[in-house]
Length: 386
Image 1 (cartoon, rainbow, N blue to C red):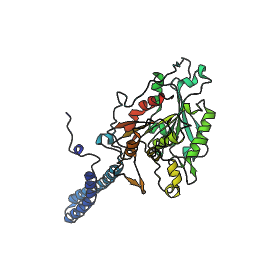
Image 2: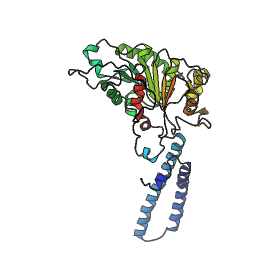
Image 3: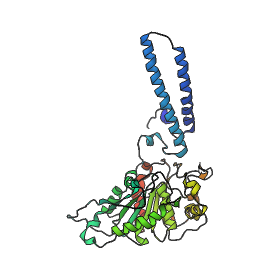
Image 4: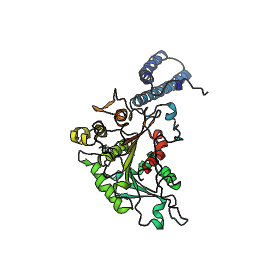
């Protein structure tokens, strides 16, 4: 049995702790002022000591204020749900499948000794239609892409969409996909496939939720510009049977939306920490139309049972993640919009054959909660052709 310090007995998500820290942020400066007034006299050494003490107390006040703000924000959005998460402890990968997966027919393509890229290659392409930060789209090519026997093979392709603020170059840092993908391929648990890393936004600081709004046509850019150019430059699948989409957080919502809305373009998809309707900030909130909202709302389609039978989408969510799971009975709001709606989506979708779920009880809205489920999510796509 492990022992816990008194601090660890109080949960990081405790509202009382957040309020206590905010109270201390106000109370401590008052106490310092009273202390200064009371200790205004004395010799030189005493004054030096008081000066050092004052400096330390001011520092403590600043630290308390920062902690108070952090705890308040964390309590609202659930980025960390335990002290262990805060110091970098990551949950262990599941030892058994948490969702039904049928074994795919894997084409065994051995990696020859003269293969120039035995671990695959991170290549990339510059895309028009974005700002400079988001113009580079990395493309990971598996080792088999460089086998002479596969010169004319078009490989299945996974289009990965990053979270808010993620450029394509940062995608594989935020959520490391290449390592798990390479292991699956080398162990013949998946067919060789290509990964395309798309940015979470195409204008820095403008989160358009993978929709066309306010003159920023991110959805059109993905479907018409990015995918078209990738197909021209690389030997990737062009039919729905060999195209897949996935993402994290905002990218997870985008993947859910694309899998349903463009069901004739993508065979299947998955989302890590997704939500299921667009949530806009300014200036997009004042620019978006109700039609755009309706056309890009997976949860609305599910509630109306308007989901094509061929759709297949896997959601990976933590019930403790306030920015994903939320509370269907008392939803959090953002700019007058419902924020996280994962629980509400699950309530309506878990009985539908088009959707599968991996639910975990622990972990907040950050990448270490969800990275242990990457391999299983990829294997889940494998049964549909990835």
